[in-house]
Figure 1 (cartoon, rainbow, N blue to C red):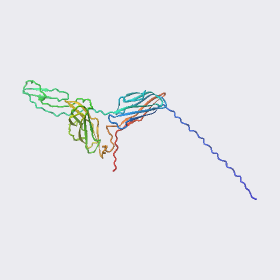
Figure 2 (cartoon, rainbow, N blue to C red):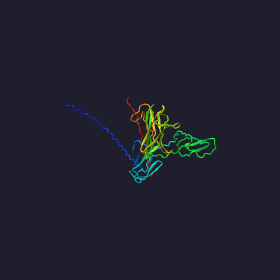
Figure 3 (cartoon, rainbow, N blue to C red):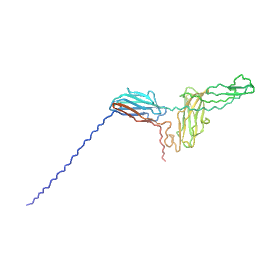
Length: 386
């Protein structure tokens, strides 16, 4: 026999887990608006531009999902640039206009997703220097011996021509007999001056003058300039005189065979008797900057051709030679020292960008492009490991 015990245990009721309600995320549908999809500006080349070099500006745009009307694209010329005639290009149906240094392209209707490329070229202008208002130095006085005619009193003035010496003579004796002849410059005391005050002739490419000098020198060093005059004409030129105005805060230590003029205008001048076609002549001179000078600018230099007492040709230097003075060491390759030195005669050229405007029923808009630039030559600081 055995005892059987049976236990009736309660059955656990399972806990019901509630299923979370998932709220669907609404789909955002963007509503397109009328307008240009993009407009961008490019320049070619993108490097530094020297005087006389050209750049091509290219404007590209694409329309969005709505047709636009009265589309106008404009772009202003940078300050240092001049528009090249007949260089404005656009697709068929576009019209162009130029006013107040701004180029404008116009299109009555731009279809959906249409693209356009608008192009023009510009040239960096070479600065035109103002002709120097300088009086050419007076020629040394010359005196001729006069032998007065006995018992005669006379006063005469020889004819005067433009840019030719002026002669004035006076001789007196005790007699009152009227002279029978007018004194001539060859027989009277003369004082000759040759002062060129006439307006210089129009600049010609037949004659050019250039100058070179260092971009930087160490404190206490001297600066050597080289002037070069070239005859590009088909004939020989005679009676040339090269002038260079001495920079302020500088002392000439080597005139290079030239002579100087007296203040207020301190110049070095060289006489060149003959310069044959396609030939050049160079002249050098050396200055020492003042002790407190930090920069020397040599800006005014020119060459005159005087034939038969008249100024027939003048060439004026175009570039300003700027030399910075500092302490430290100068890099042999770049010729520069210390902190970066930008070429002052070549500032950057910045095109601020193109602007497009359009119309759509009940909605007008505009959009700007990116700017572009042609940088100046920049030299980084020289760093040497000690």
